[in-house]
Length: 69
Image (tube, rainbow, N blue to C red):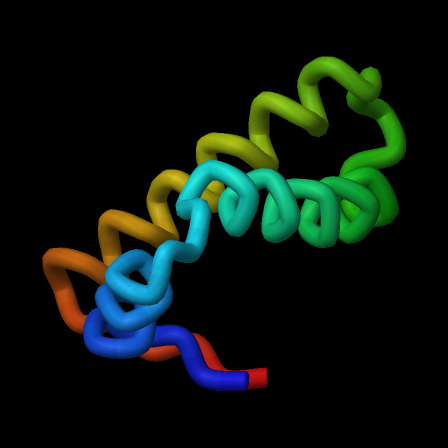
């Protein structure tokens, strides 16, 4: 799976819900963060994951970041 500016635009143009995509990414990132930062509570981890996904979207959209899996 590859996410970059073009594929994100295609996803949105095809009717994809960006909010659902962001939530899905947050749900996948949060458990990884919880492993790395066991001293933090679930609310803090959730907020960190949301901010991280927001930053990823900004980097993809404005700075041309490409994520590959």
